[in-house]
Length: 143
Image (cartoon, rainbow, N blue to C red; front, side, top):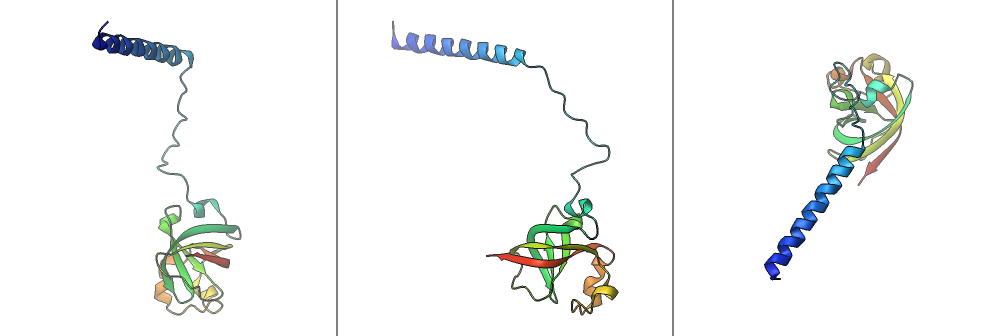
């Protein structure tokens, strides 16, 4: 038998074997239906949607900007993509460093929080007014 015939017979045997395996495995399992999509949902709820004011939360995100001693962090899992983090003291981090922040979720009010957290420029905090923010008890900067 020629070398070409041997390769042809071997390929035919392999193809027949693969076809048999596909037929057997394809026919032995019942089809599984996909779970129904949630109406109106385009993505899973964000981290901030799932927590309530007063809850403890840990989030790892990139520093977006620094305002006074506060951090604005950015992550796709956050509502609107950003979160205001109020700290007790300045954090040695700069954009786009990664930080892990542990703290308590609060409803941000410049009037109520400005003095305690040394917030200066009211306009810089206007986008966060009435939104959930995080009062940090611990900040880890990843270098």
